[in-house]
Length: 142
Image (tube, rainbow, N blue to C red):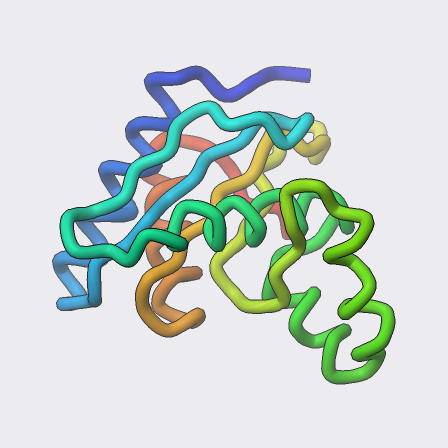
């Protein structure tokens, strides 16, 4: 299993912010965590509201905790709202059912971390997360 370096995490954040600027999005926050859900790097753009880092972290850690993107968690929430509502009580870093949290995998498909992005619409947040991961030469979980 490989791991995400600080340099890769910062590349993910820089590229996510760049994508947000290209799309004219609201200010973003991006959190990159390792496979254990521990922060590698966290940044919040000027003007992003104060809860944005926590929201981004919940998207990333929830994705890791359930083994699927936060978009898929959102889909599950529509089908099983009680299940997803209870996650907050057992997920210490949160589990947010909205797109913007993507799992990063190694060549074998094993999770090595995740990225959470928030600040604009969830679809745009996810676009920025994917752009950041690609810019770092890493792979999003299929």
